[in-house]
Image (cartoon, rainbow, N blue to C red; front, side, top):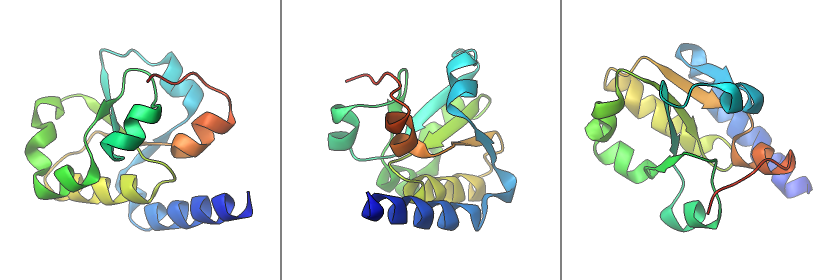
Length: 124
């Protein structure tokens, strides 16, 4: 538990270092949002994604976003919600997307760890 808490805090700190351009969305706000107006992007590895992810999320690993931020260009007009396990990779993805001109970015508060801790449904 302590180790997981430390990773969560470190992830949050690394994400907050440049997140002034990015809003945060809570789990409840995401669940209540119109799924047609946003794209939920899980930036974890395909293996992590297959073990369980936020419902309606798509998997675009961080490495793919860094290699080609335009990979999400078809979603550029929608709000994009990013998350990973604890926040670090979502932060790195946001940084790459901001550099490529993306503006409608949000970060899922607490990422997958908080989602699971709240006992919310996951898709596999």
